[in-house]
Length: 267
Image (cartoon, rainbow, N blue to C red; front, side, top):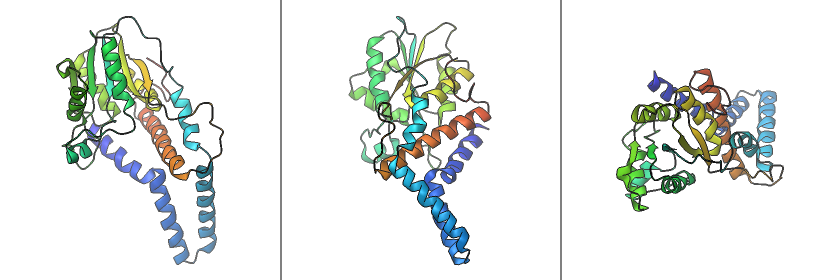
């Protein structure tokens, strides 16, 4: 069942993503013109032009991401004693790393940097990296294997880190991590991930019976400049795609019972 959900979510998003919808809209306009359905073609073209203009002018993606990024406090007050620290994968491009035989990091590298920082702050805490492959076509390139190399290069003793390399999505991150560490009631576990991804992540861990303390990093929005106007279609469209994907993920995870609430705020 988990594999069916994984495949359905990947293929479904390929069609429902803003990029996929843009292609479908352009093809639909062309087909309508070929069929001489001029009124329908003009209406669809107008709707597409207006949508793309709004996205080009305004940071719509940031408007959608901001409520997710502020769901949990940034730089939170942490307990004196921490039993474990979990960092979710997603920052390392394992396929590109294998191609170049060098660790290739995406723009979400704050996850790893903060993991290293907190590991030094809490030397007695258990350390967990969870991340396999989210690819539909290949499960051979595991992010956990390249995380080992990254942390070793940064001087960390990787013998003190548990690397979970089978999780394909956030839901499996929580399930596999809980099975590995078997947390006891009352323990303090920190969870590190991108800020806008934290609500869904916390909801999944809570649903799995694994209470965590959110430590959000990698913020994408400018909280004091959300109402700006600027012509930057490429950046705005990219942010809009990321934001819509996360909101769709929240709805789907809640609908399928994988989280506690639509917008979880803790266990």
